[in-house]
Image 1 (cartoon, protein in one colour):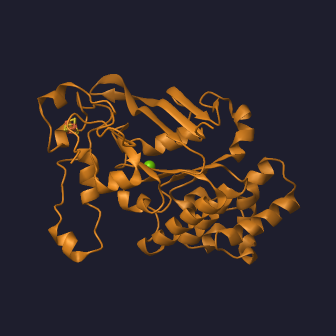
Image 2: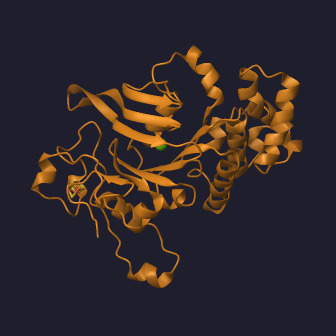
Image 3: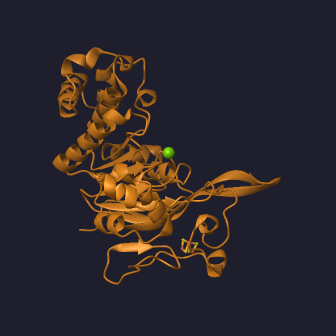
Length: 323
Ligand code: SF4
Ligand code: MG
């Protein structure tokens, strides 16, 4: 069997300006990866790097400018909303801010059952399934007739997850599902998503801005910078031996549980902010912030390649760390 999802050269350009001239802004610039059934890929990067836009193109909340999204063998990147409707059952999204993604005027029963009603499931049956979904995500069915404001952020995100699971999807895109939540409940929601994706055999694209959040959930991880994937591979390899200087910097900011190791560890602080996608630097777009940059980096954009033969990991860097 092929991958459940094959993303190829996915690109999104928005109209923008460079100085006084009109210029296309490439928010996502040629992103490619596969996702196997039941597999979770963590997609990580600073805000504005194009990770949410990538996720939205995959579930077709946005239509890509170029490239393809092949889901279960079928290119869905240009399908009309009408042709997409039956696929909505299988592709679902969990959003960043649970409260703003839930309609405040609808009861939880209505919110959770909505994807079922859209698919033509009778109301009584949809409500019964909503009750079961509440239990699945750790809420009580007795609260089905409440409105979203009656729930905490963590509970509201559980409702968002129940809604995403209502139609029995095979693929979930979770776009920073915990970054709007209190730190104290983040681990619970990450744990819930991890349990559910295992129990239900879901494939998942888990988007986050830091590597610590996705570590528990993902099988593989992809790091994005300025619209491109700069490193992608098996979680164990990437976390144990990051090869791209940007991945190394992101990982050096993740606190270590052992205080002695934490004190001994060198923190890599990057110079400046990511450049605007409206004016990407030439060559390797990371070069103005990279501690290892050489002349060639300013001239030639590195392509993704396997730095250590035989490894399931690719890196876009002229001088990857392979030690
Ligand atoms: Fe740094 Fe050069 Fe690698 Fe880019 S290609 S990440 S500038 S070493
Ligand atoms: Mg985002």
